[in-house]
Length: 551
Image (tube, rainbow, N blue to C red; front, side, top):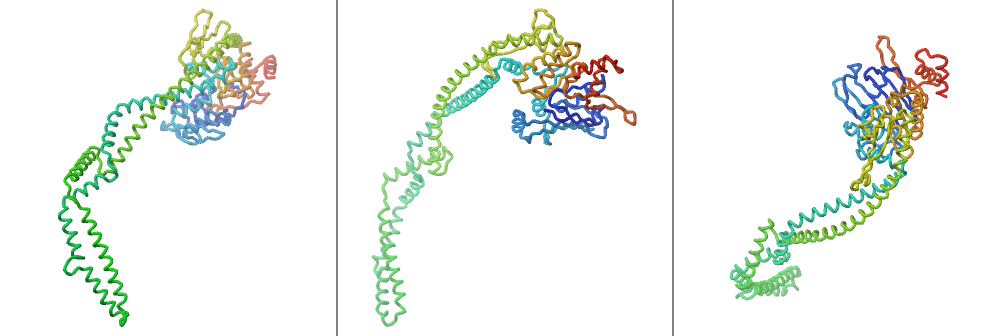
């Protein structure tokens, strides 16, 4: 709901504040007083492009600011969250036009693009001017209207949830099939690589160990010679080191009783003796491990050659990297099987959901068709009341493939002059007729549908008397469910307002005219409406008529 509109330095408006109530707000005033200028300023809030020609004072920027209560507008709050904007119960939207021509838009003090502003404010304000009923260019509004009349709003919402669920499953199925197709192109080659690695059957660090072992076998004679020479020096030479150490230990033992200080030294010698004895045994063991077997060497060389070939092929440097690649290939080929399973599962699920979807769509379509005659009849009755006795309204419904709205394509048609030729409503109706027809439609759907603030610009153009009265009645009924702002020249409509604004021009001390607006009290309303009936100096009859209308 629009709580307040503030306009500064815009066209002939110096400073103006409008605070409408939550029901029917009527706006009256002489032609040229500035009502259309107020709408122009409001259009900036709705994302229209700015023009620097609207600046009164070229040294100051023009500012239009609107305050909305969005506490009950869940869709708008969700849209704010999606756009990563501050989400509060009151939303403040501001447009600024600088003297340099630059225009900026803000939502809750955060700069936004005009496209985003237009998208979001369409959820707050529905501006019905003489031309441009974009709602009818989209069958979404027409479908919603028919659902509201047929009491199928909840069923349609349930269908949409099922539709989006089905759409999500179809997308997952398509993604998996695309992945499967891509993997199939690579699967044979990956399987070949995996078979090659599995056939090689390398163990951890095998290539490195084989390389080291082969190098040892290539130097086997020298290795054996060195190991043997070391062992001989320790145990088998003419004066083996181990025996000498044993003799030294015995000699130190012989003087330990008279010189206790050598006892620790004798212990250390014994320790070295034991260590060398152990080393000698290990040297003999290592010597026994060294072999010179041509067959084993050939086998090692073959494993090394294959290993280096695979390392080069896969850009690897170690056996561990080859084994990691082997594991990765196994996982990828296993994932291919998983995708096959997922496709089979999703295909079954998609089939089940589609069956449910078409069943719901057919049920919804049947109820819509059932509601159509009553809807058509009510609109035709209302069109007569609002001054269109020769017009005929109709609905054309065609079956289509399941979409977000069901299996129906709905179009509103109009025969404006009993010609027997129906055309699309948006093409057949004039600006004034379109406004009144939209009023008729929305008055019928008001209770069932959530609508933004509705603004009608001279919806009563070209009518008077009973037709104007009926327009006022419809507007008042509509305002029981939604905030309505109506610019009017008809006293029958103006009198129906729960709040009445009067737009006028006033000269300042420099004789410069500017647009002003004020909220009329009851006596002021009677006089304003009497002037709409009988001119600037209304008669007693006009005053009496005005009082009757207001009361």
